Amino acid sequence: MGVAILVFAINSQQTATRDYAAYWAAGQQLVHHQNPYDGAAIHRIQKEAGYQWDFPLFMRNTPLAFFIAYPLGFFGERSALCLWVVVLILSLVASTHMLRAIAGDPPDRTHLLAYVFPPVIACLSNGQLGIILLLGITTFLRFHRTNPLLAGIALIAIAVKPHLFLPFGVALLMWCLFERQLQILVGAALAIVAALAFSLIIDPQSWMQYQVMIRAEGIERQYIPCFSMLFRMLVNRNSFWLQFVPCAIATAYAAIIMFKRHREWRWEVEGCNVLALSVMVAPYAWFVDEAVVLPAVLLNVYRASFRYVIVLGFLMAAVLIEVACGAQIPSNWYVWTATAWYLWCIGNTRSADAPVHAMNGKDQPSARAAETGVNVIASTEP
Image (tube, rainbow, N blue to C red):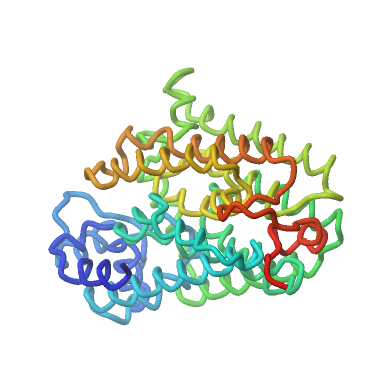
């Protein structure tokens, strides 16, 4: 599957129209010590690579993401695309195997569902960095008990797209303080400081340039199919601040449940559900951003009854049909998907009396896994 995607990406005549082109063009500017948010320069680079639209495709991430885009600037468009797709595929493989390890390395093949999760497929085909963020979140889930410093460093993923993780981030900060997991905070601080220092060394004016680009882009005037945008459109489309109301409410909710349940908190269960909630209520989020919800969905599958597995199958099939039929990422066809993943995860969690049901139909001892905080489901093997 990975080879097929790579060959298609290399030979496609439309590579410059994918989101990858934004990171590559920014990398080209950074390598030559130029403004990575310069619309005219970005558009010129993309047009030379075959970009056909009349407006530039910006990398809208803050300068903290320069460490991701910078290496692409040393390569031509096709060579950089090969490197980019390989990194995405390896990140997906690593994330999938870590999620399987969190579930206790069960002998079945449930983890293969990760490779057909619709937002992941869309992320690969569009060259989006959501899968790299997925790797960071999954690394945190896998090592937050056994290697907290590494888990904290992996949280740089949250800083790259902070608007996707606001309730999750607040719950995480409170948990670290309540449980005195200071190594995680130290690791996160080190990673953010390193990314910030790198951005300032490469381009000392980068943060001012970013502010200029954001104002010129006018995100508040753009339609983004997501729950928060739908809420704003239903109440008052001219009030941009309304897009932040669902996120504010969800953040308060996450803080309350963390305050009440921090002693028995499990990141593989409650934490993943908050992750899915965070993406659902993000002030703005595209369908490809939902790739980071994979841990919540896959780990819930390991605990799901047959009925909930069937429901998930229908949901995934419906979205896969939309992807296969060529529905564009800004399409209204995707406005419901983030909500569907969250509601499915919450419904499955509440229906499961204990996390002991795997897809192979065998009851597996999970009390020990819950105590260690590492595995959701213990292996059936001795």
